[in-house]
Image 1 (cartoon, helix red, strand yellow):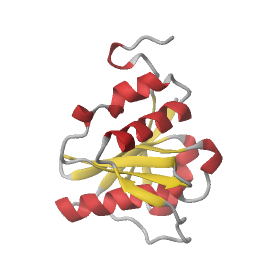
Image 2 (tube, one colour):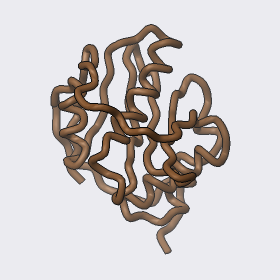
Image 3 (cartoon, helix red, strand yellow):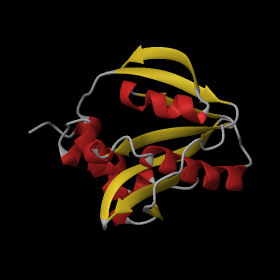
Image 4 (cartoon, helix red, strand yellow):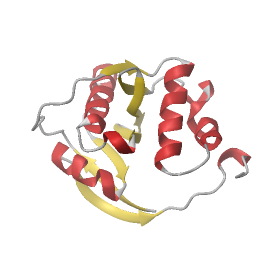
Length: 161
């Protein structure tokens, strides 16, 4: 999987209306597992890998700001923001395949960044984007700074089926 490292000193304003969705802060097991399962499905890995990687409560210690968007009671997009060394890292942003290209990734990213900025005062943000997410981040004001490959392996000792 090829990723693009991207950075924004400050986000650009929203250029199109963001979708109407029930956006919930990640603060309980249900929202943690929803984000983990959305990511596992997006990367075609076993659900247990996602649950082990980010679904456990110990991963979600302060300060970490995340949201999941729901449509008709179903989780459809999510992501989180983590302060790291004077900047805000945007991570694990995902949208269910059938809901892509509707602004949901931007919605949860902006909501998570707003919470993180309010709590930390930080503006500069950075992330790693897949090819499918790159246009979203360019529209938000991110600029590419590096490209690099990554590969999947069994997270935290969970073997594939």
